[in-house]
Amino acid sequence: MSNDSLQAELVDLLLENAKHTTYQMLPPCVKDQDNRFGRLIGTQRQDEKRYDWLKSNMPSLTGRVIDIGANLGYFSFRTLQDYQVNIVAYEPYKPHAKAISIIRKLCDFEAKQMKVVDQGIGLREIEALPQADLLILLNVIQHAGEDYDQDLVDNIQNWRSYAVNYLTKLRSKADKLFFQMGYTWLGYAGKLCKDENIIDFTASLLVDAGWQIKSCGIIKDFSEPFTYQNYDIALTTHNKVFLPKQNRNFFFKVKRKVLRYPKNQAMSYRFAQRPLWFCEK
Ligand SMILES: C[S@@+](CC[C@H](N)C(=O)[O-])C[C@H]1O[C@@H](n2cnc3c(N)ncnc32)[C@H](O)[C@@H]1O
Image (cartoon, rainbow, N blue to C red; front, side, top):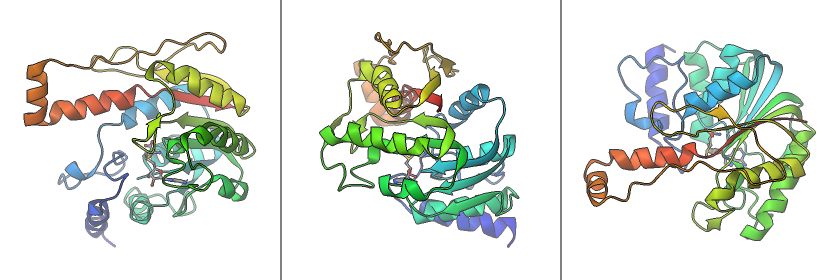
């Protein structure tokens, strides 16, 4: 198949609209010369900055990487490009899983370098995962109870013990974990913790699951161009969270309604405050 037909197929897949569509960017190995993908891909979730932070905390890596909730495979492809590894990418939404396979061809990677599995990983599926050197688990676990394992997390009070259990089981599968999560349960039903406690909350979750926190990445200053910096976290006292200021000015609100752009920007900042975690067991 030519690159042109592969790109056309990718466009069709990206047009299939689902909850996590337009989430990730395409990896840089996809050359979008005709600007075919522009509005079909996400740009607000700091993919490049998140990956740069991981890379700066992980000078070397070999072996196998498992990406749970790979979406379009941005992190899988970047890792494959930069390290001597092979990848297993799990993505239960079939159009996305298919998209990852097409991107793999567009980027000239072989199937033996990256296996794509169109399955989700719930608590009961962890056992069957292969052994890996790095696990990537970004922004999936807060969806337990909605996207998966609805029977195990039927209310917000069950979520924390479920998550500790899930992260504990993952420890038997890999030495290293790159982790990020959201803090609203079911996207609307309630907050897992207060905004000002997201660092304390996640640190204790990881520690209770037996992971050693090697680094935590946060954005302290939200003026552009911002980057994630390592933040020395304390395990026994409160860790300050740097929240971007929301603009409540009347003209800003009107502009936001008319132009829509600042709304995206606000969303982008909200996402950017989610800390990144690099852990070892
Ligand atoms: C919020 S997106 C996060 C994407 C990506 N990990 C990131 O942070 O850029 C969640 C992704 O996980 C997938 N997903 C949902 N439930 C899953 C499960 N049980 N196992 C693996 N992936 C899952 C969704 O289809 C979606 O692509």
